[in-house]
Each structure stands twice: as C-alpha cells, then as structure tokens.
Length: 290
Image (cartoon, rainbow, N blue to C red; front, side, top):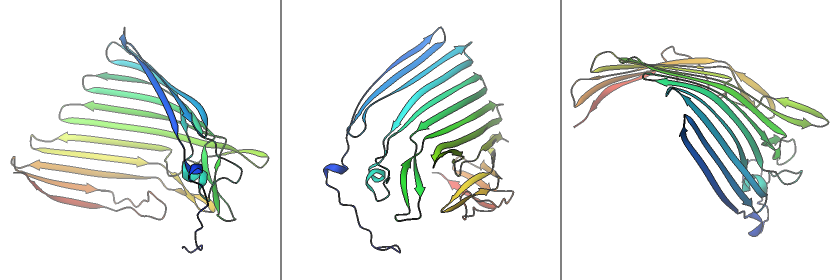
C-alpha cells in the first residue's frame, strides 16, 4: 500500500519469468613480438529470449624503446533487459524491449620512464537500442523503452611525476554524450549524461617535509552538470572546486599524530540537486600502535 493505492502484482506463470543463457568464449594473447602486443577475444551467447549474440574485443599495442606505447581497443557489448524491466508494470506498452548493443573504440599513447608516467586516451562508444525510462501522464506514469542510439565520447589525460620528496599526480577528463531518438515524426537528440560533469580535473601533491612528517594536498575541479527533474525541465548545477589537506607526523614507532582538513576554501556546492555537501570541516587525532 502506498499513497498511490494498493499495488497489484501482474499475474505471471513461473515459466514466463525465467531466462537462461549459454556462453562460450576464447582469447588469444600475443606478447612482445619486437614490441608488438595483441589481445583478441570473442564470446558467443545463446539467450533463450534474444537468440544468438557474438561479441569481440581487439586490443593491439606497440612499445617503442621500452618507454613509449601506442595502444588501441575495439570491442562490442551486449546487455539484455532485466526481468524487472521486462515484466514489471513499467514494461513498454509498445512491445518487448530489445537488448542494448554497443561498439566501443579507444586509442591512446603512453610515456613511462623512471619517475615519469604520462598518458592520453580518446574514447568513443555508441549504444543502439539504449534502454531508457520514459515519463508518462497516465498510470503507471512511466515505462521502459528503447531509444535509437546513445553516443558518448571523451578525452582522458593523466600524469604522474616522482621527484623523490615530492610526487605529483594529475588527471583531466572531458566528457560529452547525447541520445538520438525519434519523437513523433521528427528526429531529436539531447544531452543525457545527467550528474556527469563535462570536465573534471584532479591534482594530488604528496610532500615528504622531513623523514617523519608527510603532507598531502588535493584539489578537485568539477564543471557544470545537468540534473534531471521529474516531469520538468532539467536544471543546471553550478561548477565547484574543493581543496583538501592531510598531514601526519610520526612521533615514535608507536605514536603518530594527524590532521585532515576538508573543503578548506569553504565551498558551498551540491553533488546532487537539493542535497548540500559539508562545508569546511576537519578531524585531528593520534594513532597508537602496539
């Protein structure tokens, strides 16, 4: 019983809500033939509701001079609807849901030598028959349906440098995505990566001040995001950044003191619309180990 009245479970026989799948897979790995590496894999699935499906993964890489690597990946994926999506009262009124199928492409370069590790990756992923939840003005006020295609792409940059007493780790992500579908007689597309920032940056600095005293400083920057709102237009969440600091001092082998400062700049922000996050806060104490 709820505010909407009693819930009436759909009448289903035991056989109708049962699924089974048989899968077989194999892979081939080639290691370091004059710097060339390869992983090739395939999987065959027999699904009692969705028939025969074959997916594969092709992952080559080439290493130059033991410190420079070029790599890529081409793969496909398959995701069947859940039993809930198929049989709940929110099942599609247009007919049975089709499984999602994806094609992913990734390529990048990496440099690693001694105390330096640099990496750049571009990725693209297209999903056909993407399963989405569609709001409705009539009971049960929504249902699962297949959209035409989901297109996501992005760029990832990573860097790690060890100077001995100072270590730096940084990463940057640029993300974009949209769903393309048909609304009535027109084709439409819109951004639907809700709560996922278009740009994310992280910087982490570790400092060994003395043999017994260490400090870690981290900064995170999150760009604007879009938050979905039920039965209304999405809202835009403002960008924000946070600055944290952690430090510990080893007094003896049994005693260690620490301080942990969070959101030092006292930033006011929300990760989820309507729910505030903590402003400046800290914790300090000692650890005893016997």
